[in-house]
Length: 76
Image (cartoon, rainbow, N blue to C red):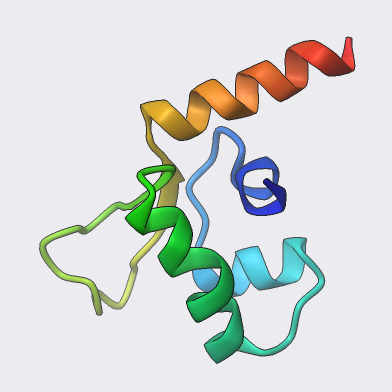
């Protein structure tokens, strides 16, 4: 959930997500947060055909945006 809220409606790099979540360990972030979110269909890669693209960014899928919007509605 924290990752979904951090990404929101923008595209973010791994470094930007680490900063937004106040995390430092890239390797554990990827294995504990990013990969599960991608595997569950909440987050997708901007360059999905090239996972190691030098300008790779991540964004919410329709499923991820639905969760994000639902949470934002509850905040009102």
